[in-house]
Length: 102
Image 1: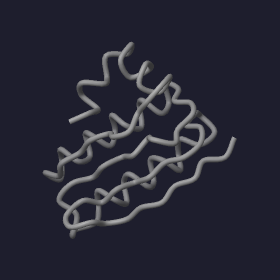
Image 2: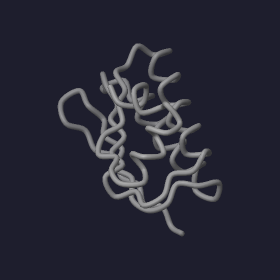
Image 3: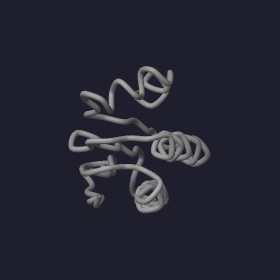
Image 4: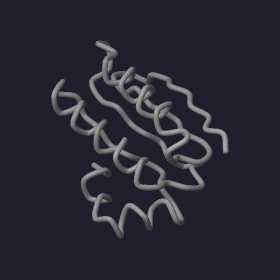
């Protein structure tokens, strides 16, 4: 399955918009997009928008948590937005929804 990514800025927020399936085959693309958004010196916060994500596996959860760590290291805000359905359920079950949303 394909993963589509786009990044845009609004004020100090860099938003990574994700669409498709996040799994072992696509996770490197997500990690690269999150890392680039965090590295943007003009961004004070990074939002990862999962509104159009249909599947999130353990590799994807790991990428979201890696993004959180990277943002913390650079004193950037970081949150996951728009998770719904099974994606939100995966985050809730794994206990990551409280840490990933914020």
